Image 1 (cartoon, rainbow, N blue to C red):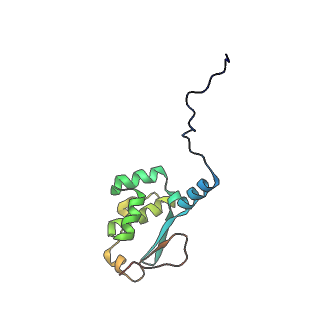
Image 2: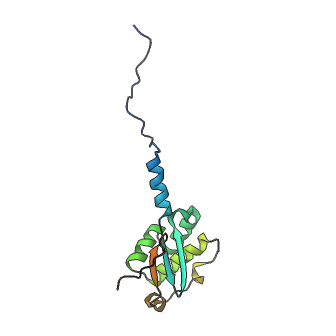
Length: 129
C-alpha cells in the first residue's frame, strides 16, 4: 500500500486568474469617464481617478456613489447633480473645496454651451432635447 494521499478537494482554485484581458478590461473601465461643459468651463473625470476618500465624501454629501451620479447626470442633469460632478472634478484636481462653494443654476444647464461627452473624446455632444 502506498503512503501517498490523494487530495480531498480536486476542484480548481476559486482565486481569479489575472490575465492580459482582465487587465485590459480593468484599464478600460478606469479610463472611462465623463466630461461636461458648464458656463464655458470644462470639467472631466475618469472612474480610475476616484479615490476611496472622494467616494466616501461624495456619498456623505449627496447620498450616492460616483457611478450613480454619472447615471443621473446622463439621464436628468439637475443642479445638485451637476454641482456634485463639478465638485468631484475639483477634488480629483486637488482642490479641497466644500460642495456648497460649487454653484450651478438651471440657466447654466439650459444654456447652449452645456454639453456632456466621454472624457476621452474631443467631440462634445449636447443633452437630448
